Amino acid sequence: MAAAPEQFRAEVRSWLEANCPESMRTPMAADEYPGGGRRAEFKNPDTRVWMARMAERGFTVPTWPSRYGGADLSNDENRVLQEELRRLNARPALVGMGISMIGPALLEYGNDEQKAQHLPKIARGEIWWCQGYSEPNAGSDLASLRTSAVEDGDDYLVNGQKIWTSGADRADWMFCLVRTDPSASKHEGITFLLFDMATPGVSVKPIRLISGLSPFCETFLDNVRVPKANVVSEVNRGWTVAKRLLQYERTSIGGIGGGQRTVTLEELAAEYAAAADGRIADLALRAAVLRHRMNDRCFALTVKRSQQETTAGIAPGALSSMFKYYGTEQNKGRFELMLSLMGTQALGWTPGGFNDTELETTRGWLRSKANSIEGGTSEVQLNIIAKRILDLPD
Image 1 (tube, rainbow, N blue to C red):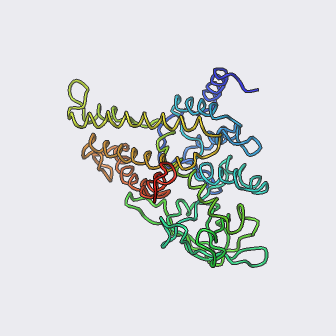
Image 2: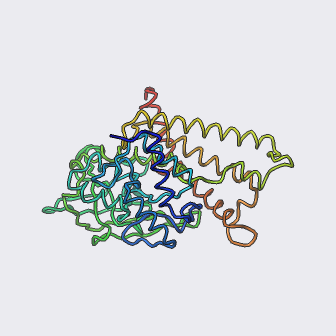
Image 3: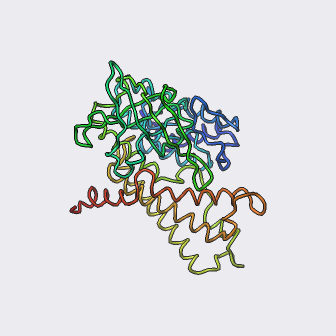
């Protein structure tokens, strides 16, 4: 029998207070990203400790079944957990495509062997995953992909190129869309495959971005041998899995900033743009900050309502496009307001006249521009909203 809400909250609060290291209650530095994986390096030893403790409790994937490393929490219980984590300003113990994308997709579409093989490792942070979707000539029109998988005994031989494969240079496994029936209609001849990035024939080339970082990569596949047992769902029916995974991805992207507490616009204003009475001197800028806060609150309430109406662990269907579109627009707008508040202090690139927060803000602002592209462009999301939510004619 589940504990009473207040009893559960008290238990969670007590456990977090006892187990969350003090350094994990500070803002997360970019080089302390808790992605895990076979090649994980932990600059701060507490990052590994926090990940291990949360994984042991099932709190890295709290709504997953316990047999796969989760805690069997309901949506309401998970909401309490997230509220208590925010109360401590606790860093995420584990992040990445494993828990936000491929894990949920495997729970829904994977067979028993695939779930047993991959989900516990994902929950413990032992495997870093990357996504093999986009290609140089298949971006928004993803179903035009050409990467091929040809049968060879018990395996497929995969050949092609993927692009914008975030984190591929550090990833252990890839979930990948391949064409297994070139004669079928473009949506029907696609298969969803999993493979180890250490497989011969896989090569990765990072792409340097405007922010100066290289999280995106090109991935080249040259006669990569993948066992047929690594097909998720059915051969030539991968588009169904792919669309579902995109809903998980879009829901995750739409929740940008939903983990650890970030500096508020009001706090930035107090430091960079306040008048003598503590208020923002520029009336138009003050109104813009207030409007952004109100929109944030409305969006959070809408997401909460959707979660209450959704089964634990299941993405909210086409609504994920609405969350992705609005959440990323809010994030981009927040960075634009940060620049307006901080002025030229938000445009630093190298030390000397700029502190660490200011330098991170510059890169964060540049990185936010990709929000409206990744996971499906804003234009794609608006089309989905029009067709699937508003039921508008073509």
